[in-house]
Image (cartoon, rainbow, N blue to C red):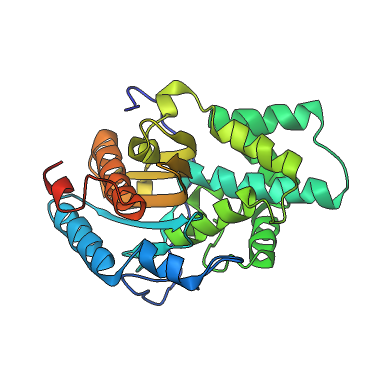
Amino acid sequence: MRVRGISLIAIALLAAAPGWAANPLVTPRPAATAGQPESVVESALSQDDRRALDQALERYLRDRPGRAALAVYDRTTGARYAFHERAPFMLASVGKVDILLAFLLDKQRERRRLSDYERKLAARMIRNSDNDCAHELYLTIGGRKGLAKALRGLGIDHTSPGPGLSWGSTRSLPSDQVEVLERLTDPGGPVSEHNRRYALDLMSSVLPDQAWGVSAAAPRGEVALKNGWLPAHEHDGLWTINSVGRLVVRGHELLIAVLSERSPAMETGIATVEHLARLAVRTLTGSETTVSAARAS
């Protein structure tokens, strides 16, 4: 659903981007998942498909303001794809998913379930994108150091929490945010079944006016998502627009992250993010609407 009239997020943005080495335009990960023959993975996204998708994304972004990047993992086939991961992006409220992951794992280490008050905080943080609730949970996990430690312990190495208590200025790459989604939703991962279902329930029931972004790629599928939107002070008020989530589309379970910055208006950024998500999902799911046919969309 396209957003209209969402209130702005007020986050202190004090961080400067850390230095990062340039990443490849397309970054395939280890191909096969347990129990899957490699041939299935290879057939899921051929080099021709990758090149065609690269070209379609490049062609679309050529006339768009700002910059954007994406990563997607097809859990059904094992295929991975990443695009334009050259420098990190500010996460804004997408960072709330990282906080949720660290918080749930903290509770598991303490061997206890969330209290009613903690559940209220987590629910409002994800469903309502409530910044005060996110701030309180961020303090609970140990702030910047606690989040960094949690992510590093999970092998998520290219995400840098913002300075002080500025969780919204956390910087990351799309592939790292896909890794966050993997750890949060993997049945064999570190999050318990109870907490995994709870997290997906929250992300599947965000407020209607926040149900935009990667959901555009799954109009009739299952969607669990979290978005971030912010007129960034360090970009002279230009918009950071991000969307991450789990989609079930045409029999494929997809984890996808699309990050963008420097859009002149919120809706411009949303249009960019949604179009990139649709192009990537069409390719990975083998939709009858091919990349070439999608060029005019």
